[in-house]
Image (cartoon, rainbow, N blue to C red; front, side, top):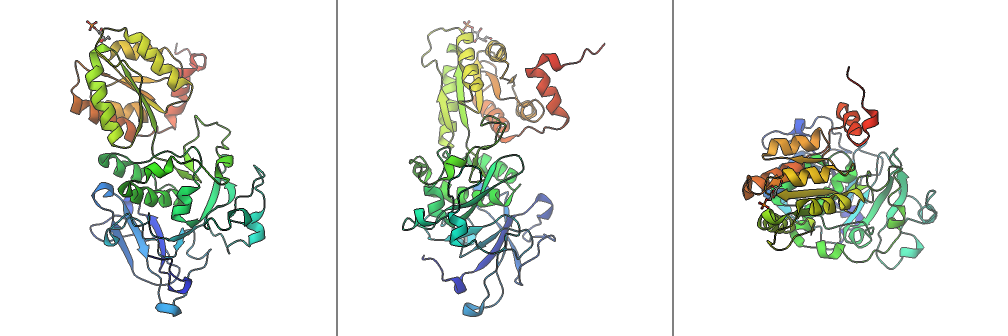
Amino acid sequence: MGVPRRHEAPCFVVRPCRPADRGPGACLCRRFRPAFGGPARCDRLPADGGAIHELRLRAGGRGRHRRPPRLGEGRDEERLSGGVRAALPDHGGGQLHDAAHRLRVRRGAGGARPRRSERDRACGECQEPHGPGRADRGRGRLGPGHARTDGTGNHLPQIHGRARDLRRHRPARWRPVALPPDRRAVHLQRLHRSRQDALWLRLQAGAARQGWQAALSRPIRGGEARCWPKSPAGPREAPHRIAGVRVLAERIVIASDHAAVALKAALTNWLRDGGYDVEDLGPHDMNSVDYPDYGYRLARVIANGAADRGIAICGSGIGISIAVNREPACRCALVSEPLSARLAREHNNANVIALGARLTGEEMAKACISAFLGADFLGGRHAARVDQLSNPQLAKDPS
Ligand SMILES: O=C[C@H](O)[C@H](O)[C@H](O)COP(=O)(O)O
């Protein structure tokens, strides 16, 4: 499908529904204000993303008389113009990949598209031009638009251009993003915090079916990478973002002792099948080893930021969890059921879970890992407590 001509372009305003919006078969969104007319319909993504609804409003008018929406209309909703179909079931899903759909996404009431001179202007932060200006001419229309910050220092480039170009110009930090089907919904639900997340949600949902993760590993071109990360917190604390869109995939390291080699292998394959970037730190045979060696190895990788989360396994899980926890940067939770695994993330910001291969079966281990990876730290009252774990001097004497 080619790029629809401007006056033919169906006009959508899209955002993921919030839980409160959802109803059986119909979107109950009240907050949404369409740019101009059109019925609202809430589409449910196919099975693997079934928890997410999309609100889609087709603009009023017909054919060439349909007025395309202008940026800045539609209140603070994201605007996608030009036949963005993303992973909607009535379109078969995944067609974003090969269709030359043009995306134009602006945050907030952005006003008119910037003139070329504005797009060519160097970014105030990194002094690099980000717009699809002269440098990009002839290579597609992409471009992350001029970058802004989100208030925390993260660079949030606007995105406009074609979806395929968006992927081609990914920053070097982009990683494959496929998730196990049972996790995708969880993550998608968590991703509706911003409109750009919603965009990525659709890109990702389509991509997972098309298998273009491989394309993501190509070298980067374009200027985005120079903008990332800008967070003062540094890469270890900053969320992974692609052009302002949070990335789903995480780097996971897994280690065990001889008692858990088989379980480790099964879990590694399972995670890799789900698209995770998993590194097996060993051991790779059943010869007897000492669990501290592998626990410390895993802890070092987490501590130096080379991986986001870790899975440590030994016979009971006890010994290796103790070893990992000797590294102050690690918060390792020994778990044997999913609720503990989730709470370890939500309350304790655990970045490693430990499992006992002699006590916990494979399916239960997978359930624990799913709960662990699918949960986020809640912060709030828990944040100061977690800080005290890494900095015992911050703890007060309770007496
Ligand atoms: O906490 C330690 C772990 O359970 C070890 O996997 C366990 O001690 C290994 O025991 P063994 O050398 O008898 O296999």
